[in-house]
Image (cartoon, rainbow, N blue to C red; front, side, top):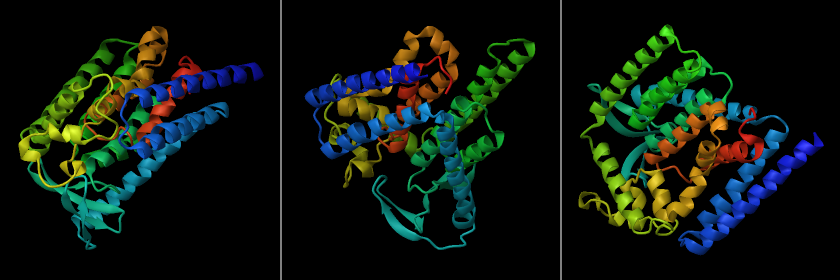
Length: 360
């Protein structure tokens, strides 16, 4: 046991040697516009989260930590559903108007625990989006999706009641991103369950779920296509790609958001800062901020999986969870939020220190 712990401690030390060497490379090659933000995220928060997961690995409580995370998300989900019904739909309490710096719009808040932000048309119905404790739906949808991914692909057993609450809450956010990824995650979970015991019945279930998933996705895209949010998202991707192309390897500077703004369509240019323009792509934010150099931190665990083919097969559920998280970042501006850094540190500890052939 002592030898085992010493071996894992050596892996931890080796990891931090490589990591702070990477930090030195970034500081030497990438322009840091916001030094405090960079230091807080990558020098303090990420290493602290890695140490935390390593400590939980030593005492065998990694899964307990993730279970508590999901339970916390479920609590916020139920809390938001109750307030969404009582405040947003039944108008039992009158809210207070406030300005949202992210969207540049005036929203209604209820004691800072619930917000009315937008009214969306959903299959002919005019509904207020459930944004929970956040003044914008995308962040709440991202929180719920992390709960879905962990519950489906990381925790040993999937709790149907928890999944029901999370998916119902996702529906009330009216977030296309949330609904698409939620449906696809459930489909892949069922597919992974039957992949090792393919028979006629299994194929029938998988094909049936694929057909259902296809029509769900098609209906959701039809609802959103041509909408203002779809136009904004398309322009965000174009602006982000143009900004990244200016410096593919090292980016344009960490937190240098004006580079992306300068490539946005003219109809989006109005008085206000970058946040009021509501940029939505996290991956392209990373690439524009620090190029491939900064993006390498987010993609490294995935590259290790593809290098270790046998480990990738044995841990395909966690592979799916990691891919889903990275894919979600394409259409959500959440690359530097604590939740993303927390989950990223889990994958680093699992694949680089615990050894990806071991159970969590």
